[in-house]
Amino acid sequence: MCETGRVDAQIIYTIIAGLLLVVSALGTIFPVLPGSLLTIGTLLAWGWLLGSGASWWAAGLGMAIALLGWSASAILTGKKLKEHQIPKGSILFAVVGAIAGAFIIPVVGMFIGFAVGLFAGESVRRREVSGAFGSSWAALKAMGLGIVVEFGCVLLASSIWVIGMIMHFVMR
Image 1 (cartoon, one colour):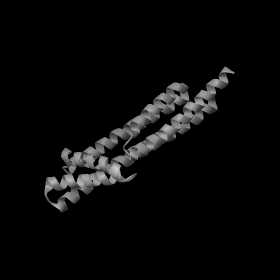
Image 2 (cartoon, rainbow, N blue to C red):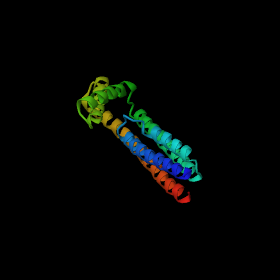
Image 3 (tube, helix red, strand yellow):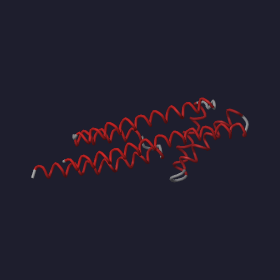
Image 4 (cartoon, rainbow, N blue to C red):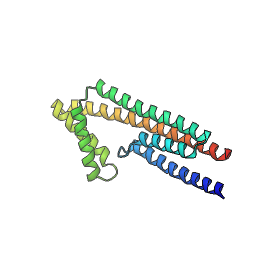
């Protein structure tokens, strides 16, 4: 009877972890939630709560991949922004635009607001539309690349979690 309660709790923990991993994947695309950080925390908690070799193996490998994706995203994006000489002031305009856009236009407003804010910041800085458009487009591509890398790593970490979950419950 005690064993049944333990397995039931493990199933509940696993379902909650699966839902949180879906939210974390969405968080890499919609940066309202910290996608990679949520992935790392979820995998750590899941591995600790289940405590098996399979759960720890999957959690550890998944956390390493999510951390790698999070770091690579930041490094790639930062490198591209420096390459195109996009200053922090323009990024601040973009963040303010993203926040405003999220309230004005549901779902896609954050992306539109970010792009408009970035273009506004670059227009003020450069005082010319064509140069502002070129640098804004380069910054948006850099941010997109970072999102794709981070999203891919979170999906890979989640796939490893699925393998670890199957191994955990088969070996019980």
